[in-house]
Image (cartoon, rainbow, N blue to C red):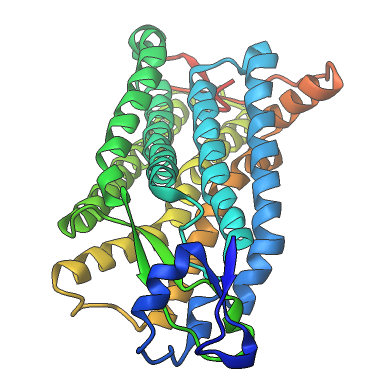
Length: 387
């Protein structure tokens, strides 16, 4: 509902909404804002919202949902590794729907890029709870995937006993802990505050609402705590996964050196080539599922960490001015969205058994070749695809 008042704005007939009446009275003697465009979307942001974000959302939701379906549909895909990857896909879907969906609704609801009026207090809590939940769950499942591959290649006897029995429990515990972490961050966005703005006496500003609402922290110190609780687990997870990757690669090389040293004369050149291809496939999948994950999320986490340091020092250590920071965060956000959407494409594009499983799930049976294996020093064969 809107009321019209032309006492100050003359023939422009400035529109005052019921929700803006309090602001209208407060701003009667204030000077209009000099740069109202700074509160709106940039041209590049409009392109991303109207074109890029919907495409990433559709691609990510369809791709991750299809991968989850394949894991449940194709029996040989129901491995420990794929259980973790399926749960990673669930967290990616949650993140894409919450993060990109909220951006699309915000754009349709307000001309201001930071206006959270459409959410309300409950919406602020729910939105950030689900984005944080998906973030922490992703850290858990990418680590569990790396741990499973480490055990499969470096401790194969242990994998068939302890890890296999505990995988379902680990998944449940991971979601519970992720929920707890996400809930602990809700005070960082649990308060919606209204700010009054007086726009210039000209079109199109006379149609803009005077009130902009933002999701803010209940207490100021909560912002630093929230950022720290997000960034510290990320860097800890990065270190843990890096150690696991290096251990896996070292074990693969050691196993092959041992095998060739003991059986140099009995191994054909063809067998050597198969083993080296198997080793390279393991390394490639590690890069796909781990390194790309951390590369895509690192810019946002580094920006968040720098912001936490700046807030703790009364904004004296900001790394750049407002426009530059805005561009950096936008770039980091693009990478985080791509990270959540691209995994199924990488699985099918770089690993033939996954591609065959997709074809079988959606097109029927396909002829499969025997998967490549690496023979470890324990004289057991480990399927490098996790299938």
